[in-house]
Length: 410
Picture 1: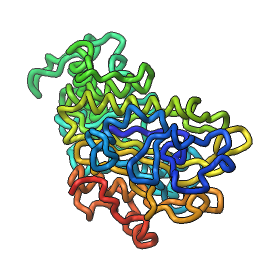
Picture 2: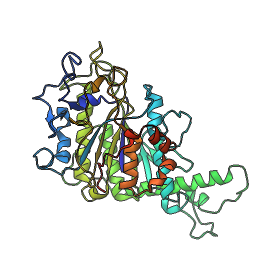
Picture 3: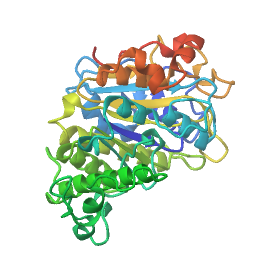
């Protein structure tokens, strides 16, 4: 899985347009409104996509969905959020990553819990099962055991390179190792010293992960397959490196983030800051689809964002913090289509159904990830409270929020 956090709160209403809702109009969104003839048809008679998402359509298109030839491997999940929605960037981003809405203290990530439950992270062979491509550690991947986090693969090394990294001992009893790998390749010399075992384990993990990454980089410049072209941006580079790591290392999960979605001012319409962000995302996902065809049947590409934007445009030609928004899920096991944005799931006054200002949720983000954990990764349903503490209680409190959307093939 590759997951992409769209930081700032993506405007779901201009990303996936509820054309069938009369409240989506030039009165509520005078400078942001996308004319019907400029938007992209979803095929369900109700929803349309922002025109900047055109590159993504080769994944979404399918003769059964919209009459267009294509893979049909993209699910568009509208109205995703959680009960008690926070409109604080920091808090809501935290909840979306620790999997516990309302808990700002827990730093352990819900994707980390899935990894920890399925892999012995103390085993040398599992030193690089996941990674974050970010300048700051992603909460979703935080936990007791270290998950590597770096902004650029070529920079994930020591200034002295392999000389400092060194080589491990030829045997557990040998002292012929060199550098970091030689020092921490032996058994701990002071295992009972406070934090001694922790420090020694950290040194071993660091050495192993750096070795894996540097081995991948040493194979030469990475050339995407199948005419894939990643955006010429920081996010595009990270997506390309994510693809490279999935091909050249044992990594199973890669996470990254893209900021800029806090569009309070001059958000733009067909063109503009929001359109540019959506276009970059769409081109990146198109590139992943082409580049990772050899893994596509086993891969998921997932986007998330902390909240949506107000249904009514503000006085600065932008939108403010609101409630539910959109997730994109793409991969060979995806049942393509638009979810929670059609005549049967979009009630009258839906755009103002939360506090008379916001688009109310229909699906809890934990339910969406519960389906991912169970159907894609094969986790037992009984594990959901372990991966996302409070899952069962939230399900009892708001059962409609936890109805399965069935966007993944059984």
